[in-house]
Length: 416
Image 1 (cartoon, rainbow, N blue to C red):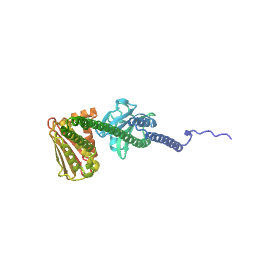
Image 2: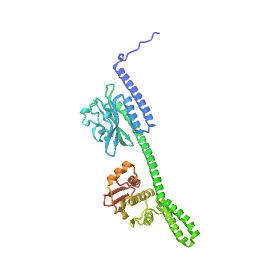
Image 3: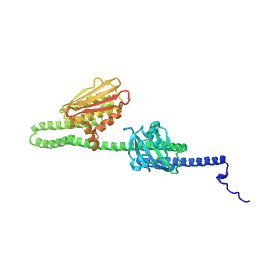
Image 4: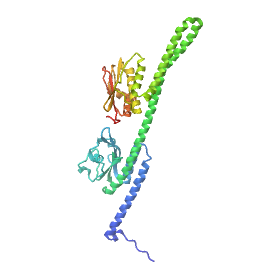
């Protein structure tokens, strides 16, 4: 039986041709969606944020057959969108450029959390040269928001299909699905980076604590114990030659041993104040101040009469650590004669002030030096204030002493 000749698409009537076109578009859409889903699955295994962002943009450009693209992330510290990755177009000229998060086409997409297709960016009222292609000729642009848990975290933009066609609603639907998966991957990578950063920070803090403990042991109990050993050796000779003088030497050794014991107990108290866990912050502060007063070089004045509430244990530990840090800084740096610690409970808040009459310092300058050296003194205080859901303020100036003020909301609502 002779085979029938294959019919060309043009041989069918217009209705059939339209049906063929719809099938073709559907096949292309399914293929693109499968490709994007496969890419999205791969993205979830990438935890390096920079590499992930580059992979997201590269995959989007490739699957959507675009000529160029960019991925912008929101910086909440400055309320700006930042070009984190750029491919094609102006490339490196846009990398790390910033602009207000409510400006330009990208800013509109970010602010309203809605995608946008623009066929001529130069005639769009929202056009911002730095943010929307600059001098690159953008015949067609598609931008979709990166949304995670209802919150916009950035924008994904693509420019100009290589085929010369315009982006359409099918492209928008596909890119939105891809952006949704990408946003999850970005947040996962960010969380991973935060965990790594926190782990590294804890290691740094642990090392600092070990060094400080070793220094304190060397400067305190270690030297006292060495003196005790030397005195005991001398005492052995005294007993052999002049027994009558032994009592005075024994008194001296006892005094040194008592001093060493006192220093060790203070160090143990500073590391883990049991009274804080059992009796709360007011009792722990009183015990801490009593121990500090045994050293006559600094007069410490404590007022906690208006404070009688128990806080969350983590809050109490954080507050106590801030006070320890503040008083320790006074001893080390302030050249002060007095320090006043005041805790006052008012409606909805606990206010703690640590004030000294020392030399004071330039707060911004010291913070800058701390950042350069990686010092953790003021940083520790700020981080512990965050743990306590509190607001920390440090006021100081050369020659005018220092005031450390901590406001802790009793309703457990962060105060900023």
